[in-house]
Length: 377
Image (cartoon, helix red, strand yellow):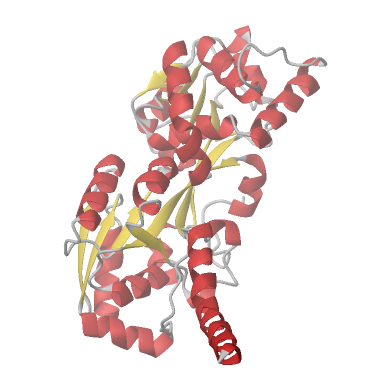
């Protein structure tokens, strides 16, 4: 009898192992979709998506309406696209998921700090990477899955002079006092995320090293670390905060100015520079960073009624055809097979020059940075 009980206990424990491993994996990484069900691909995924029949998309871009039309014509799935701003999007998705309403099936959203804490952490959205692209897209863009990468770089008025900045600390010097602009970080989450990223251990060390390389001496801290110190000196040097990148680009690039101006804004504003008669040029290889780039993520909400159609659309959005309306200067697909048609600099090359947004760090540290920035403005 005793031997029988021992064997039974061992059997029960072994039978639970797969579920224990699954639960542990789910706890460790909330960004990766996990499922014990068979994953549909190819024709099976298409058939399942068509059976669901409808698809609702939330996005910050009006161009997804055109992509939705193409997708509907190709697969016969009725598509509805709703355009929303970042803050509105995150609040709407979280409320609808919490109430399990029949709402969005695919969500495209940015602002990693809020996305992580308000959508990912509570389990309101799931990251999905198409099976065929899991060995193609770099892993850093899969957890969570990125649909688009947007660059914000140091841009200067190029009418009379070329690039005068080689080290980011130069923007804190008296020569540039009051002649640098960026969008108010309290008006756009990705800008505040950038400042938050500057304060992490890796980037603050790079800033300390860059200071020593420029001035030949160690940085004397009056704040937590070199990241906070750079933010303080950057703002206190008369940084001009604008309401939109478009307006900032027009002010920076206006011709006939007696002194050169510099701005930190989206590179895509250079697409219209010639038509607006602006003199603008991007900076490259500033030590230790030339700006930052941030992701627009794609998710399947927990309350989706058409999860297979959602997966099929994400796969389409990451294809050459589905990404075509977005393949322009300043926007880059995480799919390395889709080369930017207007920029000779690839996203992998920009990655070496720009700070990339980590949603988990932004969620953890952004409140502290917001408080700090408020104290120095």
